[in-house]
Image 1 (spheres, one colour):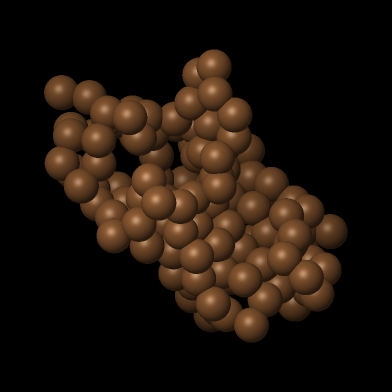
Image 2 (cartoon, rainbow, N blue to C red):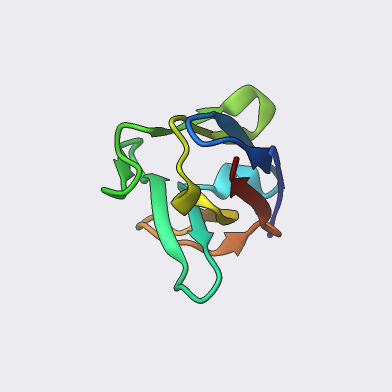
Length: 118
């Protein structure tokens, strides 16, 4: 079992930056995949960034070049650095981890609201 706690959401102006954090506890040694998703009102949940088993990273086209996923093993935490934010980035953001040896998303955080508005 893995428990995830997110932090770092809030209100930011267009062009601004935010960093989301996701702290993991529990069976953290079993984590193979780490990822960030978001869901805007009336839309499906969207995958944004992933650290896959083996360590490679991947990004959705909508955030490539603006968002960066990273990890700090010493703090059991991974991050989503978001730069050049746009109003269309407004959504609830979720962190997720997978514990299987393949790419998977098995546990989810509670979600944190990000609002980009002037």
